Image (cartoon, rainbow, N blue to C red; front, side, top):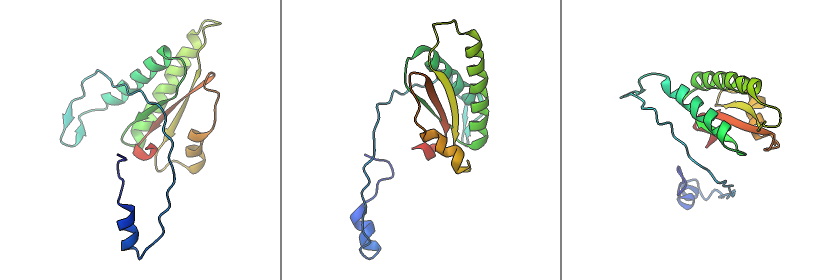
Length: 145
């Protein structure tokens, strides 16, 4: 069941028979990975920002161990996303420095995605890339859903 789905007929009826448009979605195969690092929680959420580093570590491990496929990381806000993107770019630069000729996998393209991001920057997430040459790592709020 789609999260946030509503009863379209009832909604239409409430708005005096407004037309209902159906837009088919696309689905893609997804593998879900979780960090094994414990995250201390408070009633307000994570007690510290270690989960951002844990997310970066998991993404780097996936990037180093998997062939093709993009990576989507969900975080809670703009600051965390920007910090994670900076850390991922540093890790990508380190990987580029240590690659042996002939053993190069896809390059890492790190892209943020959150509500306050300028539209032009947000649209980069949807740009087509050659997945054998570039792996997108999108770090997003739930806007990516």
